[in-house]
Image 1: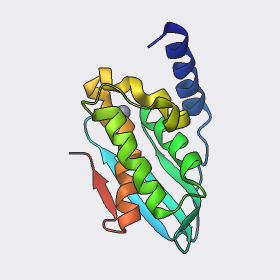
Image 2: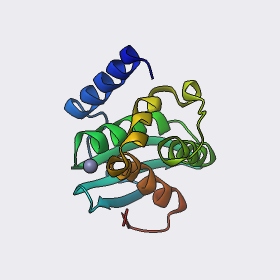
Image 3: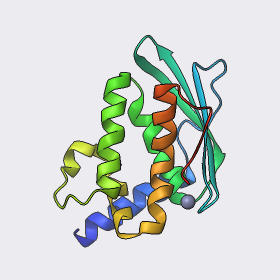
Image 4: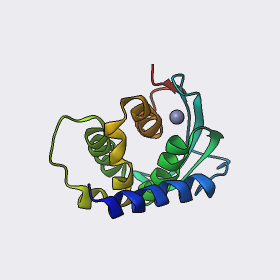
Length: 150
Ligand code: ZN
């Protein structure tokens, strides 16, 4: 990764950590799931408002490290207006980007989410970045009211 690109990515993460987007409660919400990463102590509650198959609003509450906060902040921005299927595809792509063995990843297709690709180099931080997405995955499947990365 080029030096300038890395700086740019860090700036986006700092910005989303300092000013998290969609940091609020949706009440009433259609989906509400708690996520917890015991390795780092990151906690969040994800709220979704649905219109049929479309995520019309997404928000979160909770507290965690800079990576987990930036990740969930970016995620709530990006999934708005997406269908369940589109969001599920994004989850898979994000998972592949942060944990996959694949050397070549189409970062352009990931848009802003690409700022978190660097966590691949820090295995201890991967769960901080993926917590939001595992919580989303549970919310999409409507399976569980709480998720733990362990
Ligand atoms: Zn963390």
